Image (cartoon, rainbow, N blue to C red; front, side, top):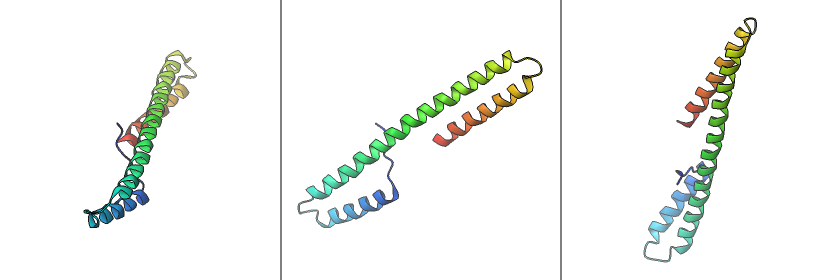
Length: 102
């Protein structure tokens, strides 16, 4: 299960609902619980989608590095400099994607 990712508005709404639920602790809090469950479900769905998108982006970046390495090895002497720079750019992109997930 993915970690929940809440927007600022959702965080504020949850805080208000939790405070309201605490005030009405002995009363009927079913509506508050349903609203909290709905917000949690949306946040979980968002987290899951972002995790899937991250995996796709990471996979594409790794593929680009592998392709650039092969092109560098297969490049002629005149093309080797451009191929080396393309590999370095691909590796830089991969590091940026890896860093973005942290």
